[in-house]
Image 1 (spheres, rainbow over the protein chains, first blue to last red):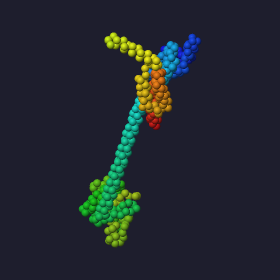
Image 2 (image 1 turned 30 degrees about the horizontal axis):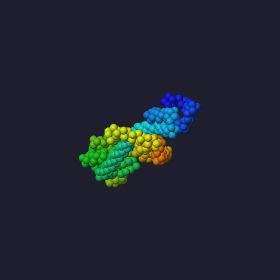
Image 3 (image 1 turned 135 degrees about the vertical axis):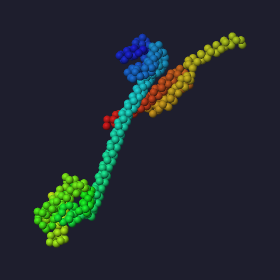
Image 4 (image 1 turned 45 degrees about the vertical axis):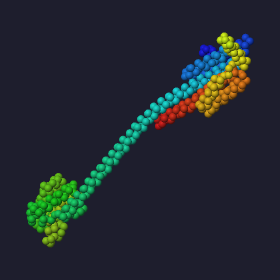
Amino acid sequence: MSTKQIKASMIKPGLATMTAGLLLACGAATAPMELHSAEDAMLNAEHSKAPDVAPVKLEEARQALAKAEQAFKDGDDEDHVKTLAYVAQRSAELAVSVGNQEFAKKQSADAMKDKMQLQGVLLEATTEELADRKKLEAASKIGAEEVARVKGELDKERAAREGAEARAAAALAQIAKVSQEKRGMVITLSGEVLFTTGRSELLPMARQKLSDVAKALKEQGYKHLRVEGHTDSRGAPSQNEALSLRRAQAVRSYLVSEGIDSDKIEAVGNGSREPIADNATADGRANNRRVEIVVDPVN
Amino acid sequence: MTYNHTRIGLALASVLGSLSALACGGAAVPHDQMTAAEANVSAAEAGGAEDVPRAALSVKKAKDQITEAKALIEKGENEKAEWALERASVDATLALAIARETALQVEAEKALAEVQALKDKSKK
């Protein structure tokens, strides 16, 4: 039976039986069951994957079936026909199996390709993720290092400032009386040291002291300075006031000449209005004759 | 005995031999077919046919038919023995094919499952 005949038998499944029936009508033997089974197996093979992927095996099966059918038509020994039909059936089944093998191989090969492609995509994604993570880690490390560096610098600055302030305070304490009052830090310089009686020109020794004070103030830092002149109660108050102002201005001018910012320093004359000691005694009056520098005055 | 006598003698022996073969079923003992069938069975077993039920059944059929062929040879029915061996051979060949098919299908299913797993992973 040719391929065309096989396809015809697919359209008319009873063809083989009909052929056998005709042969019987002509006085020949009935086609053996094995031949029918072989034809069924062939039909199955034609509908399987074999035509596409195992055409050689399928052709071998077709030829085996044709041989069996020819042997039957030729009236060969029944056992021989059965054997040929048996072989044809197994050949058809073999074609189906080989077709399935080829299909499975193709599936595996395609899957392998897909797998490699997907692994590539995943590897790329993982690499990118790792790179991003590394970048983030590096960035956060840099961030942490930067924070630590800035903090270190700030700590150093603070320590330096505190040290400078401490040194300045110590220096000031050696030069003049320093006290912390409600109106701010007050540096008190004795009038005896700064001026001769009734005068407002600074004594050479006063200049030295004021140079040290200016240096200490610059080291310590300040926002505003107020230089206040004070006298004892002897003499006319208006004269005392004018004298105290001139003395305060003299101190201010000198401090400005030593680098104190002129916009941040003022001079006021308080006369004898704010004594700190008894004006009845010589010592008391000496204490009242003074110049005070108020650092960062509150009012 | 002359040369001609010798030729006649050999021709007679040949005819007698043929007649003798016909008397014993008309065919020679199918040694080659037996060897081929047994080799096919061994190949099927080596190919893992015993582990696949459908293939194992075909191997059994092949072995049974080899046994049948041996019995037929014993009875001098060499032609029928040859047919039995043809059936045995094709059963053994089919058994090996089924075993291979099963193994390849298992392999393909595994590969497809791996691809699916990777697809699922790439979606996450």
